[in-house]
Amino acid sequence: MEVASNQIRVQSLVQEGETVVPPQYVQPPETRPVHGKRNERDTPPPPVIDISSVNSIHEQLGQACREWGAFHVINHGVPVELLDEMRRVGRSFFEDCTMDQKLSYACDPNSPASEGYGSRMLVASNDTVLDWRDYYDHHTLPLSRRNPSKWPHFSTNYRKVLAEYSNQMSGLAEKLLGLISESLGLPSSCIKDTVGEFYQNITVSYYPPCPQPELTLGLQSHSDMGAITLLIQDDVGGLEVLKDGEWIFVNPLHDAILVILADQTEIITNGKYTSAPHRAITNAKSSRLSVATFHDPAKTKTICPAFEPPKYRPVMYGDYVSSWYTKGPEGKR
Ligand SMILES: O=C(O)CCC(=O)C(=O)O
Figure 1: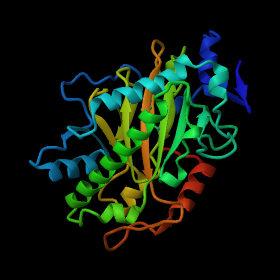
Figure 2: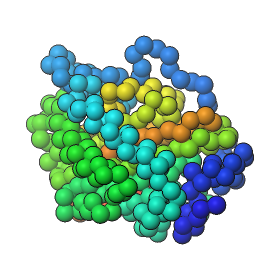
Figure 3: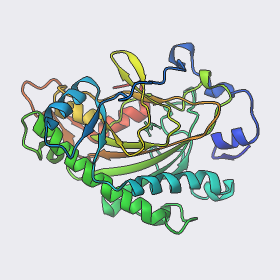
Figure 4: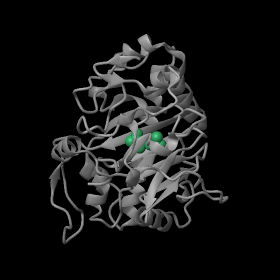
């Protein structure tokens, strides 16, 4: 078994042929997933919004942000070849590198959200049930924080693809926050100005096949802490979004990008728009990959609602993050 600083790599458990999930990965009955709920409709929920269209774009965005806090965008302007390249290099790190190569990029398990290869990102204490997931977290923006020497270098273009992907996602995140502000009658720069310079992390998650998917979660229920997350996945599927108390399977849409509103956007919009709790389930047959790009405020930034009377206290983003990492995500804070 491969262990670095007490971290077991899920992929190595699978490679060793485990047929029973070790007890630290077994969810209590109340958080176990219900399988077989894949949505078969032609237009999969959450909503799909064509952001190149001028027709009713603000109405569609407003409805999706109020009712779901998550929606797919199509005709988003990011080349589909770049989405495919990002998925390809991400998968290649997990599947083509030896475990020794991967461990040479291990993140610091004692520092939350540290950059590199890890397996225990959302773990608040040693009693927490572990996720059936390995990941690579990259610190990509602002540029002063971007250090490509910490990114995998086994393939000549991994770093180039990641840098281009980071730039494209940040442009799209800014555009979306502008449209979301306008949909509430606010100046288009309102949410972005409140968030300030983006702190962007890109997390590539790899979920190996799981021998007992009915007992595990790939990633426990959480809402994202920052402003806005842009996510792509492969065609295996496993992401679920919580809507009206029910877990809804997000059918993968190859060319689309899933937008997930995060907690600071809920605060800035004074709860008019909601952040979306989400989780990942596992499956017994195929490994699954997702790439989530988080756009957060600086830790020193104070976030408060743009509407009166405020329903949320002003919060320094760094305090919000510390509370999240010490107490655990608990679904949504
Ligand atoms: O794998 C997924 O689809 C979800 C990833 C996610 O929520 C995260 O990285 O925070």
